[in-house]
Amino acid sequence: MANQREVVVTAWSATSAFGAGVDALASGLATGAPAFSALEGTLALSPPGRGGVLDLPRKEFGKWFDTRLLRLSTMTRQTTLGCIACGDLMRRAGIEGGGEHPDKGAYLGSFIVPPDFKKQAVAMRLLSHRPEGADTGYVLDDDKLDQAMKKASAFDFLRALPNMPSSHLSIQTGFQGPACTYLGSDASGLQSLVMAAGAVRSNLADGMLGGGAFCPFQEVHLWWQGLRGLWSPDGDARPFASDRSGSVPGEGSALLFLEERGAAEARGATILGTVLGWSQRFAAPGEDDLAVRVETLKAALPDGEPDWIAPSGLGHPELDRLEALAYREAFGALPQAGAVSVVGQVGFSGPAAAPLNLVAALIAAQGSPIARPTVQGDADTADMAAALGRSGRTGAGAVVLGSCFSLDGVHAALAVRLEA
Image 1 (cartoon, helix red, strand yellow):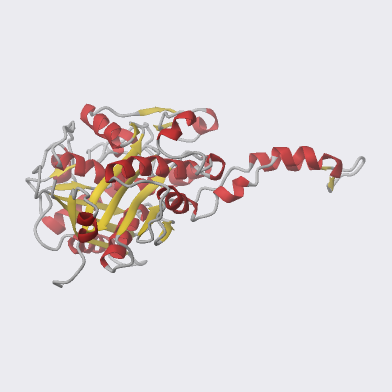
Image 2 (tube, rainbow, N blue to C red):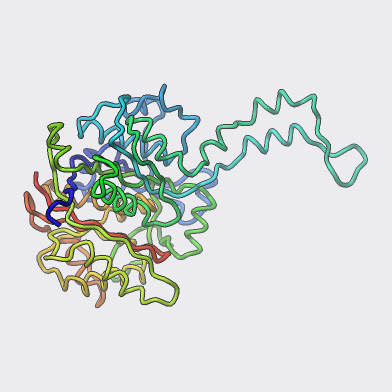
């Protein structure tokens, strides 16, 4: 339609094991080296025992957001990662925090990771005990209430509220428009971008944050994903390689700022790209999952072919095979396109992984140096393996297609054409 509102990209940011901010991601991608390290404590007992961890002291968080406004006691690790990336994005977008922006909103994809409640367990042990001479039952010792309350933290419950990540972003930015945290799928980070683009197109907002943030380093989550067969037994991730065996966990966040073109031009923003299309699909039980993946890709980019693709690239034998086949059926062998997946370097960060891959591909499409791996694929993944070792078209006009195919049958894709 001729009068449709045009959605543009005016900033992006990322945080990963390479460091805080998009510059750290670009520097890490240029080296081609992985940023994995051994996990510590009880996490070391959860296979694969290593992952991509952001090494950033708490005292440095204030460089990225106002810790007087956003209290760390109310934030989970993924909320913190999102706010760090948001601080970087706001500087790049030229937006001052602490103001009032009723025409802007924030969507973020994440998972619910409950706190471990260790403090509450200590408090309950102080309060309750078994009566002397009894074999069962407990009684509360009110005399130890003050001591127990000093051990417990009510903020643990507050941090666990599902909408806290996007709520913190809204406070940080002063955005008073739509706010939502998308949960429940590894595709929720890219879904949040799809929904953010839709919010701008449909005039719900003139500007929207969208992306993902997640920290997988909790025993329950690591074991759950391990039972699903996601983690590599040897602690390395080799996307689309013939000897791929799984992924490695990593924490991270990535955000894009999407705006209506007229609103972006009115505030003097630099327009980095135009959003060409987006889609999300759900594969119902018994439905042809490969066909749904192909439909997702084609709906996001119905005309032409991408110059760069940002696939999930989990390194999982079957998931990589399905992903490579979906791209082949949607666009052919893509002999000129380059591919970027950071999972092999910083690990798989669930809902943040697809936005991270998309930002990395946008960086590459701008012409930043990206180390290209040499990957030997098999019959199903040869096209994708070749794309990982190849650079696509760079500069204005280059088309980047990001996608996420989740284990749960939730699929999303978004295409951007660079302008600057």
